Image (tube, rainbow, N blue to C red; front, top):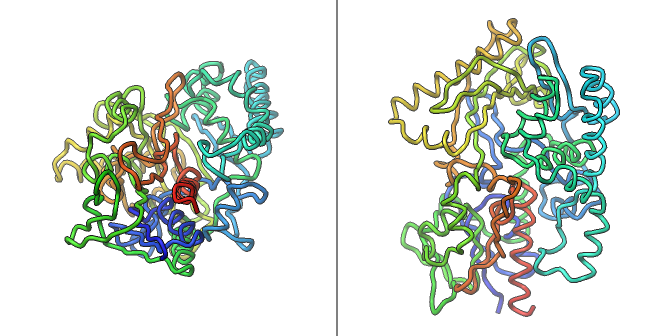
Length: 490
């Protein structure tokens, strides 16, 4: 008789698990509490406009890698997928000066050296190691715990230049790397795109992904990509249950045997795959005593295991007035709780003309938020919360106007959202849209993909491997099925 699996969470990891489950011959039910699948890979509509919430770049968009094949298998992309035209990672603006990380590394090196000859040595070293990091490959064939000697040898060959990157930058944070440069603009370019606590190699690998052509943005955006995966799941015969929250995992004799839904219905299954935020799993779906000590420590040590979120606002503006792509800009100080923001980014979505009325473009403004930011937003009563959102959105507008005064007459606020938005709609821990940050000198949280003391429960989602994100989510769904198949001896 066909084995049945229940998947908790219809985000990218849950959809991936459902698709690979069907391909492995399982009967699949995916339960998603929201009315739309995709989790944090989503978008929403406001006044005839579409706001995208997720994809900054899709690692694995270039053919030839295992990750690309995973995206193809789950239906997220295919041979006909079109990508947004882009030639840069982002641009930093400080006063009248500007610096850009172009996809063309030679151009980047040439321009940054000309901009700050005193930093020529550090610039050339950085670009050299970005080239090395282009070999970085996310394991997508099987999880590390299922690899044999030959698998490790192949992975080592693919990643043969990464030890050079780790030797040069492995013990540095983004903030510490920025201080190696004398130019204030280059310090901003290197140190302010990501939170300063992030490991420097995370920035280097991200830039290498873009420069190698392996980090493109599929046209149609995040929600459209998630819906393609929904179509793939249903085409294979999997069942997706929207607006269907799971209240707890059913357990008998130390084994997961199904799920109990909020309405009271119980769904029996031969195995359960949890593919949502880990704080939800140990926060009531199963006994908290089953939480591994490493996870308990991570939740307790907020300074060593920080998370990242954001406060964002979307605006309409007349087309042609805002620079394409992402622009990181200095701004007048914006108090947000006990912290002050002096850098914000603006991203223009002119490559998606259907997302705004004719003659208009959508621009999205972002300021990073930490655990402290989440705590502050959480402390506000509803009236205060709405007032603070309006204040921050106006500060974003002022920053854009200061950079480009000509936008002021046409600038129109569409929406503003905070870490609490991610928590409310996605159950995201502290509003995080990634997993725990990769911080130098801190061992990542160990997550083997199963729960000790509870058989039949498999873990997927971006929290299983730092720093999270879409590649971890989609591969973790595949890996959960591989572990299940191995456990069953199939």
